[in-house]
Amino acid sequence: MSSSRVLVLNSGSSSVKYQLLDMRDSSRLAVGLVERIGEETSRLKHTPLASGGESREWTGAIADHEAALKAVSAELTKDGLGLDSPELAAIGHRVVHGGKHFTEPTVIDDAVLAEIERLIPVAPLHNPANLTGIRTASALRPDLPQVAVFDTAFHTTMPESAARYAIDVETADAHRIRRYGFHGTSHAYVSRATAELLGKAPEDVNVIVLHLGNGASASAVRGGKCVDTSMGLTPLEGLVMGTRSGDMDPAVIFHLARVGGMSIAEIDTLLNKKSGLIGLCGDNDMREIRRRIDEGDERAQLAFDIYIHRLKKYIGAYYAVLGRVDAIAFTAGVGENAAPVREAAVAGLEQLGLAVDAELNAVRGDEARLISPAGARVAVAVVPTDEELEIATQTYALVGKGNG
Ligand code: ADP
Image 1: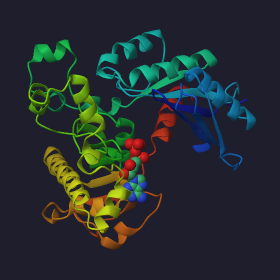
Image 2: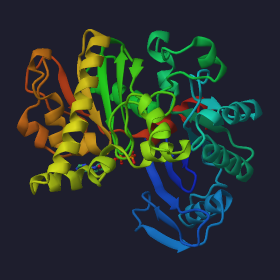
Image 3: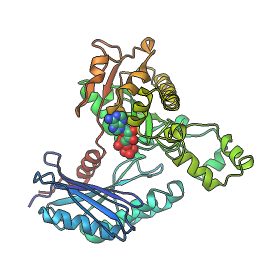
Image 4: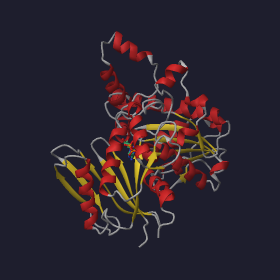
């Protein structure tokens, strides 16, 4: 019996997203998610793609991650794809923070678990949930390799000049304060797919990747290796996001505490959950913001302008970091779908060889595509990201060989 299937798990604090892939052809056999774990109204949505079946939804109390994974396994079993199947080669886990040392996907053992746990102070929201997912999956299939694929890994090639903050070195090292970067799985996948779109090897291409989802980050990738990225110690730094502020003078925090009388917890919530687009105009969905702009809403317009201004600054900064840019790739929910964002982000940058063709930019689709005018010095591309496929590919590359 060949083992060619990989289950990809993305465990959040109250949710689990999953995909089961067949790595012989990278096809998706099933996808789904469990939300609101721990509440009375937990929801499971499962889509058995292999059998072309209809999505099944279920609402009820799912107490914890163990119950969630068991419910997922029960759904998969109905389609003949259960977690007990010998065809399952491995489980690949998205782990948000791998610190400085996890530079590659890693087969999980006790030492790896301990290190992910040690990193909780720098990823208090994410790593505990990821650990719970790993422990639960290992308990269900102790015989199976469990692989951690880290959001930070792709960024570990950043030089110290980009990775360090200009603060006292001893203090920084004592608290492991440095720029780690996130969304690395997406930046890795998209920079490689962009090279492929250009018909070149990743080693020969310099790319600026703009991952614009609800969370958003930019990266500068030289010859396949990340040399700078916009997120830092946490995913708060950098671009304007759906609900996060991105870059600001750190003294805003002192001011809010001293003058505004806010607690650290309140400021944390303000900057992570009530800032960015939602703080600026009350909406964090770019579709809604564009709709309001079309109706002449000035607050929505200002939020859009601030978003674009920051994006443009990062394009310029990473152009300077790379020296030579072969392509700019837009990805994730906003980057893949919002033509006005792509148009505005490169508007006025003709001197840098950057432009979009209005007709090409208006085309919608799931495929990687060029939107720059023919013969442009720098290619501008829309490259749909696929973090689950990347996690499955990396997981299978590590454990799949020799199976079958
Ligand atoms: P995340 O994974 O960070 O939650 P996604 O990459 O799925 O986010 O992006 C979600 C965001 O994409 C939405 O909040 C919305 O702003 C944007 N988005 C999705 N579809 C469209 C669209 N058709 N036009 C403009 N923006 C869109």
